[in-house]
Length: 275
Image (tube, rainbow, N blue to C red; front, side):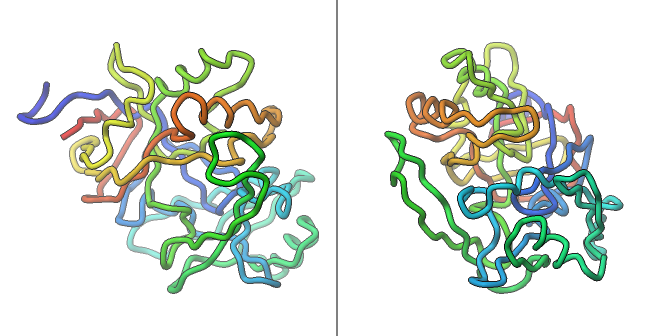
């Protein structure tokens, strides 16, 4: 135990920010957390010029190559200044910055679909999700629409947390799979204290986590996994066994979502406590 009513959970093992929705992101040593999550996270997205829906790797039949793009900020964003441009590495190895005049044409050609690059703004945007034909999912072999939270490019919440213990648990069940952090795209990866068990996150819903000296996160719900976890990226192969194992072991719920109760600085190694 630490402060009265708090339980020591562990520490921050890794921090990840994804400047452009569904592109590869950047690992951080430290950053600021605001009410909109890690500063700059999902600040931008590609929007289909035909139907107005946000491009998402959740529908790989429509967007099969998003994981071949990587986005990083040209300089670290700092609150409350305007979010800076990003540098985007294309699948062919070339790089462009988002302030380039012909950016939309270059991205549209690379994706073979007309898109518009834009920042999050007031109003709601829809996206699509493909559900593979696997037992345990809400739908099977179909595409559904869903609406992103107002004024954001998040799928569901501002912050996504996951423990290394959960990944280790899944790896032990399906050893031929590669349960790496990048398959699950969390913002905050937690290393639990010795003895911490996989799926510990299940018990956090409705509770509050404190991180470091300032940040408080209200855990709002479980993170239901999707086809994105199975997709190839870099040297990771496509593997439907990743999602199948998640379904069999924890009803497809891997990690948790959180709202920001109090923002502040966060760094790798910060202690994490459960209230």
